[in-house]
Length: 341
Ligand code: PBG
Image (cartoon, rainbow, N blue to C red; front, top):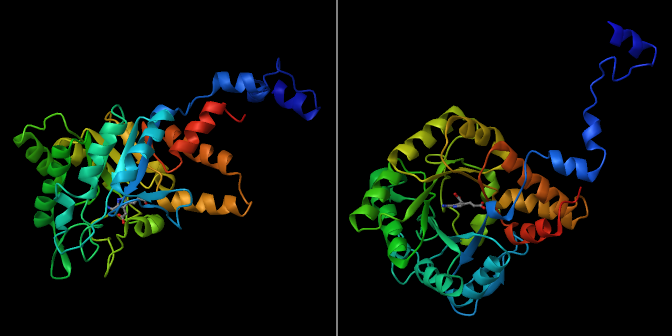
């Protein structure tokens, strides 16, 4: 009552109970002291694209600043990533010759399998995580094996497990299945354990949505489906409860880390999974989310650094432990320079 009367008379005071959250926003020092979410370089994982050939270092048109590299060029690049303080990379490969079953995906001579060795040699402490999928290796561009025009789940799982095993044999630290077939995490775990790779971890793309924001990536990895779309295996964008179920299944099957993808358009899903599960949680700020901000910044419509750090902070605030981002090296630099505000 008193407070209302004083407010009416323009006399509101602290004594009268006016709450003043702005007090702690007054200086940069105060703001930094009370900041709830601290983004650090330790949280960031950097996606890298390995392609067939030699001496290849080609910028990806739709992902400005990101390169496709051949195996001979990947070591020095990974070394630079490690030197920037980043703890790990997520590797994506591509077939020289595509086939119905995506044979090269599990070949010991595949680009990813060879890149793992090159990276381990150049940057022995860098965590190597390898994407496990068929889409960049199959001639139809789908993430599994076809039975006519549809995806044969169990035949796909068998192939996916072979791919994961080939990465483990090549020395990867973590395999990351992104195909969204049912039961693949359990199949991968058994295949790895059966060959003694009990220490190879699994980061499951647990809730991967059928998103329009993968567009630029498909150009980068040559993985666009030649017919149809991925809605029969990736999740419907309207579903959040289903994401909790998918995460639960992957954890039951033996996933060590679960991932939500994309990140910015699914912050609520990240927050809900964080609230329900204690497992390490990753979120992937995907190509389209990166490219949208990048393009706006190129036009002078956004400040790239501020927008990127805000986007990354939002993903950490939502509850992700690990953030997979094309900005990792840039963010490492920016974070080193200190906060903007
Ligand atoms: C495919 C895969 C995709 C991405 C990671 N793994 C694309 C897709 O499902 O079509 C997207 C990554 C990005 O957009 O940055 N297995």
